[in-house]
Image (cartoon, rainbow, N blue to C red; front, side):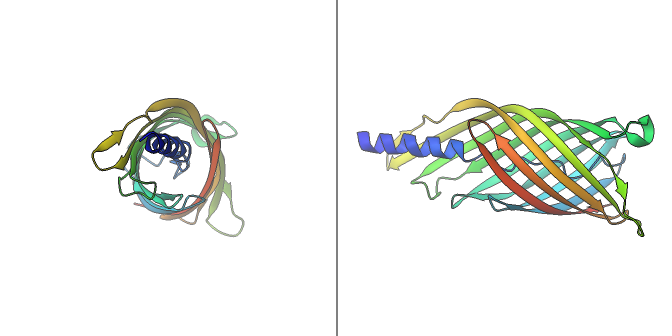
Length: 222
């Protein structure tokens, strides 16, 4: 019995420490135009995953974004859902600043089912945060395309609620807790034309430790 409890606690702690990768939400730079929409998909590397996303321009300088998909970490598959609000605080085109600056609020949720590879470990993982992104678009010579390198910083709270069922009829729920952390992202968007763009992003998430992941995405605007 004591051995089962110890194993359960260790597994819960391990799950908490490895479930923070891939919060990335900056899938267009800067916010898309009012009443415009964007759909796309991402392949995530480091902790392999497939994500779909949707953005809608709700105002002249603001948009809403949603993502959903699956992330695989240490042989476990987690359901991932997220949402964010992004506002263009400063714009090269309209404010004559040397860079575009956006601010954002972010929510991210991951769920691990009981049929995981970690001996009946299940859990929910949340991130609530806010941050800023800065970038600049440059024309690509000889074409109508642009390239937009950017950087982003998010700070917020990670919250986890992990349960372990070591054998039928016995439950342990001791993996609940909150930590301060965030995300540092570097990326670049290539806008091929008015309809298509591609984004590559490197994400470094941090709480007690750090995780690194990269993503490659394709977007369609309409």
